[in-house]
Image 1 (tube, one colour):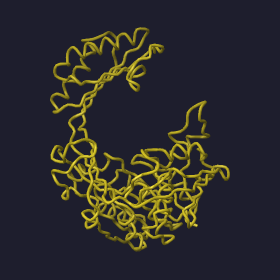
Image 2: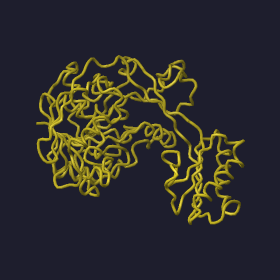
Image 3: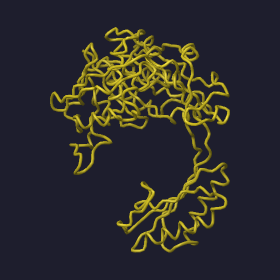
Image 4: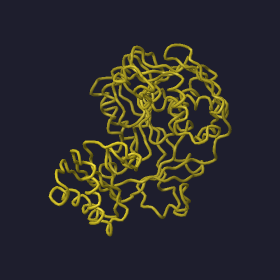
Length: 439
């Protein structure tokens, strides 16, 4: 039966669990999902500076670690680490393969970049604005299995993409392995459930789940990554790397099943309108959960497009206070900042970390011995952004006593909005290119 492992759940994910999973489990595929919504826009800016860049910054480290394991066990890797420049990513992988003297064939899927296809009057999904209202950095369609399947037929060891819907990275392997029809929406819906469960890697094995005294997870420091053994009908058993930390149980699987799903009965993907509402979960062994019951209906007529845009400059300033009156001095510092900056920066946010930074309200029952004030604002230009940081730093000698550890930072802020493009507009852009190194 088909075995798929999850080797990454986001761009900055840990490398060691992926290597351990590939070494200890006889996988058919290892999928590394590494693109968040803003990641590709940030990568596009890197590509604009240097046309040989724009792929995931950890690609080199991951390939140096995984290629020797792939050479020994000959599973296949699928990843969206290509980000804004999958072709450059493939060339870098071949370069690493040559350096390691390992045979490697890489297929590249391109066509998700649809900046040129956008119309200025297209409506933004999150509001009533149109594309022309934004200073666009990137626009990438969430491709599906139809873009990946031609790459799988090339027998490439590694398939690199840009923007592809997360569960599609997994679903394509099931379609190819079992020769499912792309119109078999029942199986595609069940396969999408499995892909959705695996896409965040350690989140289903106890990461982002563990809570001391409430939801205990053993040995989180050595958290193992998940894999699924999938039958021809899409039913699967999800487990994790043998002898690793973490846990796979009904609670971890249920939390991940509901993760980022707005309507479980109509979960829209490029491949299927998936239905999670009748999914059945059964613990069939230690760290083994059987998943069945997913279904689906016809796929949407359009692709979702993620648009990255220049949203201004984020200015941040921080300073710490300690002692029995730390909270009071933090509040005094906040009042000073607001009086000095409110006319220029009316929407400044000020938090006392340790008191009000997460829930944005002080509950009055907690009086810490130390706090850290953080002031932040999204500014239209860099000059205004500098003003905020400078005023926080000036609190050293122009504010309450005993402030320390001041820092300030300005970063360009990338915003994300969405629109839709008809399938025929996107599909004609998709292309597969192959690179190869023979030992």
